[in-house]
Length: 227
Image (tube, rainbow, N blue to C red; front, side, top):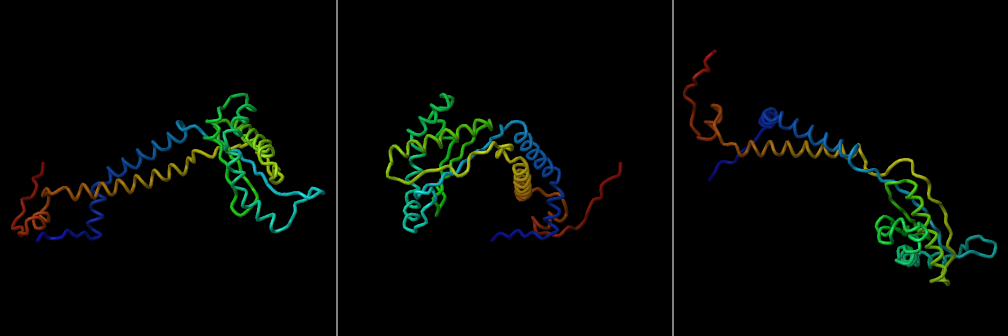
């Protein structure tokens, strides 16, 4: 039966000290590469969004507060989300944008999200150009409102609650977060790799290794000669 290999805190310290140059090299390289990619390679992405409320209005233009109506529109919100993301709505939005973006492209960069437990639908668009993000959301939301009234006339009134705002900061990439993630992952990976290298290294370098590997005592040591 082979003897189990055990490590104490001193062994951990010695291994880390022995491989410190490798660990520093890996951490610095990975962190530097992540920073260069985040700041100079990955293009920034801007996001704009609008919220639309769906509900029944009374004659004076105020929302009907009846519980049954609220529950009905909360249940129908998923239907409206499907309409907002339909090919018909995206095609009309593409036409409003002068064909700058195809319906297929719009479906990839525009997301329609029903807010759980509410009568609110959120339409969000992402683009490398902040003004284009706003135009996309405007085009999709206006097309959605028009087509919903046409294909689902018995539904509720649809009104824009919050218009899309011009985004002044990109949402991606998150530069500092990417750098921090790269630092910690490279640190863990390099430390783990150092222990793997130490475990695979079965060469004898010291008198302690002789006792550990061969199980025999050291009778004498030849000192290193001075130059």
